[in-house]
Image 1 (cartoon, rainbow, N blue to C red):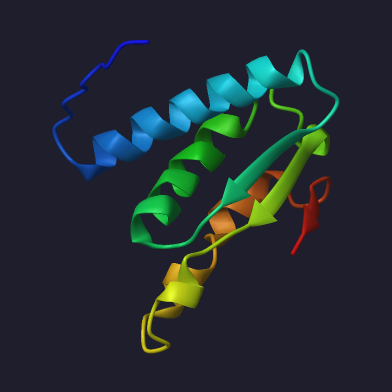
Image 2: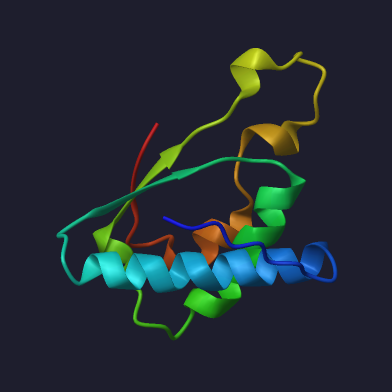
Length: 105
């Protein structure tokens, strides 16, 4: 195992790179597994990545019907005064796949 450090210009670049890598990995996993499980979190950083992911996923080889999404959050460890965006993924993540995703809460 090795450590690789990736330096990017800004948060937008981070969102783009992470979304791209996630999409590549999900497509790869779908080649060998009937269902791929993915746990999502909320927050501004995650939501920005979901926006990028939604753009990349549209027209890709990703089969949304083979995704099992799990909503996760560290909200149980956070004060209840935090903004609601920290407790749920953005609508952009759900948009391209909303009709075929199976979700559990």
